[in-house]
Length: 387
Ligand SMILES: Cc1ncc(COP(=O)(O)O)c(C=O)c1O
Image (cartoon, rainbow, N blue to C red; front, side, top):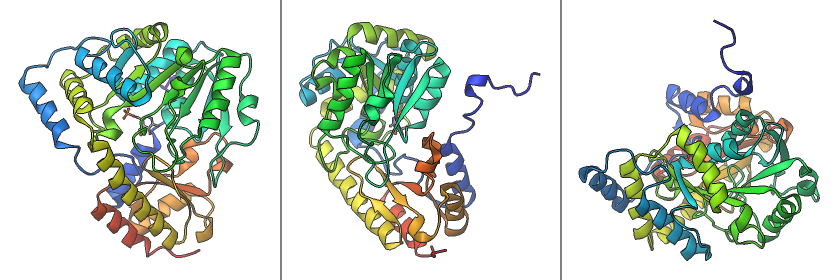
């Protein structure tokens, strides 16, 4: 057989850092503060709805663009939250998690050679999907320690060849919540270059400081924005993989065209459960945010006590910590030491940077964990010594 077997466009990607760190964490019986999945249960009302849907025999292929109760619940939620109106039947596409929404969007809309502007560090699927579509990434770096871009960086990344910009707010891995001024700066470039804006808002219910600005609410943006979200983070059910894209009909149709050949339809019972979760959740969101704020404050304090320089996240369930005060400057070597010798797993974020030097001195920690897990991890950090 031809060697290497992987197609050129994917050859540089290999196994994701999440799989790799989780494997190492299991091998060394480490506390896994690396991968962003909760180790606690999702809300009972959502789980009951999933069991009920299976019992009611909602077990065959669903509607390709999404089961009607779910697309209606998504449209209702976007309207209640942001005052945005979407036609549930033509402007919403349900996908296998936000991950498939991102892939379908990029594959549907990016031509080979088109430029795609991406914030760096980035969620790693963005980079791979741009490559699968033959697009050319252009990076805007969010620079430590406050993770803001340099003046003029956004304008410099756009060009006449820009087809799309991928915006993630609240932002993984930095924990930034982009301000209205920053969102407006990106919006102005989109309008000036007639570019499509894709916003990944999977952490929109996890904003501790500042406000979540939905890009589609800014002037001139609804017509060119694809808003992506999912139930995984908000309802602590990352294994359900129910996500969606909301966009004007022509863009939604393009996304659905790709979606129908990637997965065709998403697990039917989980779609019905997601619809019920969205309809039922009211006070749930407040409790959810309060609990996460407590976890954030605990981990930030503990990482500082352990000697890291920590940037307090404004949103998401991740925190970035600088390892230089501990005498390290190589994230991969540090994370290997951490998992093998200290018994705790974190993510080396150079995996999310094209300009590796920007992230080499950082580590990413996930606090979507039970108090007990966080406490055990933090106790182990007391073994960390300055090199
Ligand atoms: C920024 C971002 N987008 C998308 C996803 C994936 O979402 P889903 O599990 O719904 O595919 C994640 C998961 O970690 C993420 O952090």
